[in-house]
Length: 547
Image 1 (cartoon, rainbow, N blue to C red):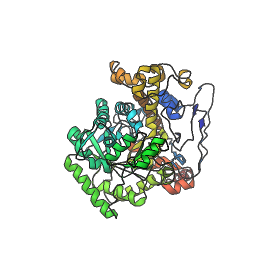
Image 2 (image 1 turned 45 degrees about the vertical axis):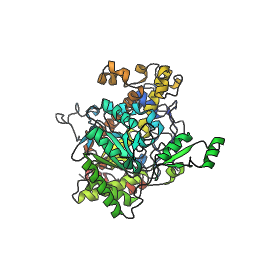
Image 3 (image 1 turned 90 degrees about the vertical axis):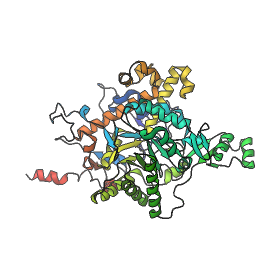
Image 4 (image 1 turned 135 degrees about the vertical axis):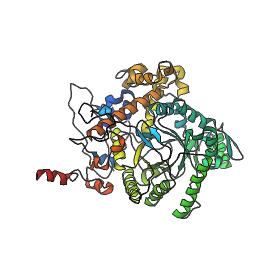
């Protein structure tokens, strides 16, 4: 197993727990007091792109762990001449080929284009309580930056205040809260996507949303995710809530209506219950049957009035991957999110997450291969987003390049949640009267913030005044600090991607190419089809030597 460094002396960052390939701790706590790179970037922003203590240090790369096939063993090309993808009106002169002039805008979709200011989107934030607690920070942050956010599965089903009559939704206050929160600050960039699983489909989520929001919402069908190969789960500690969930039609383990389980709960032997969703397509026995059912589902959604439909699939094997790309292409879907193993979760069986599925680098490499087969046949291939363990700006560039020209976005889960947690904790510490409503976890600012960064929102968040410029001083009182932290982290990621793109002489996202990568070892070359560092452009180099 590859081990990653816990500490980065150059950036003065540290992981509390064991770091994953993404650089995030394997267990990311909402109450964490720091200080991983993502946590620090949510306050310091683009300053975290550079080594600390300028003027008194020099810094050298520690990236020597080129073992195995993984995203960290893809490296980014730099070129010493040329410029592609410049915006209209810009020339290829040095004064205009600067990294701030790199455009990060992207779009996805077929008949209707959905724009995003930056090539990122959130993972699905569904029925886990942590998604509900910090939703305002996540949603407002995504809206003001201008990237898509996904409402995950089961939000209606677990909402005690939602009303289902004869199994069909008539009122969904939590789902509406999430959508309305985003739409309040939506300015034409980004999107609100609502995901459906088996239970959501049965409950009439699609019918309810189209009647209430029309084409303001994108509907997403879900096949799976990278963290697990089973339906979604949450854990509850109230036996009455567990009974409610069972009455709603969910699988609840152990059974809260069993007398022996009730006795065990009363004695303290059982302290919690797991709510599970159902597996899709259990009544299908072939790819052909799945295709027929899927095409019917898409046709039904279009008949309801949905102009934009997406699909999320997990790290199943190659047959399922081919089905997802082919079916999404043939039905004219707007986006296919392909989630590899190595991504995150709000609630998954741990050893399942550790041992199931296709790792992101392998799955995404095959995604490109399969998409190209369809493109070579003349098909208009579905736009793709890659997910599965991304957190930094180099991850964004590499994922887009690996799947180019089909990849339009990079889906980031836990990384985009951290600023929401952090901002809520800071706001609760600074303003104790807001702490409970914000689900803040701190009584006071930790020294990692108060001593090293600042003691007021204006001091702490590098992006504070940019948000104020966008929204106005009066509106700032309505903006949670978690949303400002999302803006600040996004600004750091955006600037980092701009710098990498400028170095590769790519001045818009569409110009990023697989040729902008090389592999650091032969294993990664074999799995990705990206040439090894010593082979990339080697033939051209020898031509020059023989001029």
